[in-house]
Length: 158
Image (cartoon, rainbow, N blue to C red; front, side):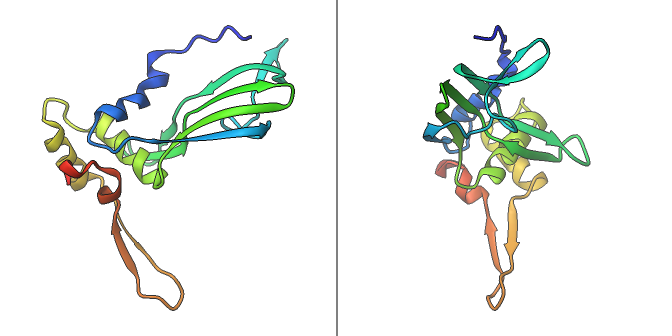
């Protein structure tokens, strides 16, 4: 088993449970090893070379970056806990139905809003500065406009 040390920052995404955002969903996978964490299958390092993990645990935290500005948050991958045993895997994947809207809005809430304000005021700041209103266009259909905050926030914050 590897001797990785995880920092509290790698688990910061758990704070979403105590925020105005709906709880995340949990999805299980059991079968042949195929769930990456995030880009590679679970692995360990031997003599500075990656080797597939035969037996052991692996974890990958929420993957994100900023693109054009320090508050232009982009979701990349969700947290994954994984156990591998001779080519088979049990993986617990953390996510949401509207995954990129969910995590990007939460990242803005967590890192870019004024923490001296109430949760409601911080959500108002999110909605004003980090809109989640999107319009979809499909061939031969009228455009549909969706405010994803209505899908990712707890009802008392709408």
